[in-house]
Image (cartoon, rainbow, N blue to C red; front, side):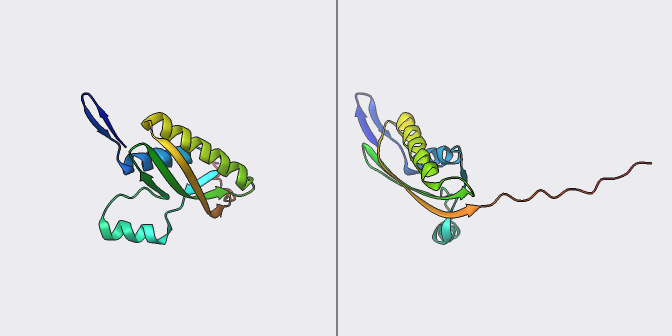
Length: 126
């Protein structure tokens, strides 16, 4: 985003928008994690950049488009989780940056199962 004011120009980096979107996504109920994918893992190793896991953005002067790759919890309706995710991300980015979010695309790449709790052996005191 670039905005010319009487005092200068304001620019918001793609990384800032990606961070806001990622945090909003992880705060959404039903989202287990973000999915980095193979190509993003390779990009991290090759470039050394801290790429926001599971989030890619395109930021223009006034608008932003966001792509999210997620893993959802098992047993929760995926369409409902994704709709809420889109709303949360759109609201967070628009409120914090002033950019208009034109689209939030969601790709569900996995389902997380709750791990069964394993009982720890109890020590007996005599």
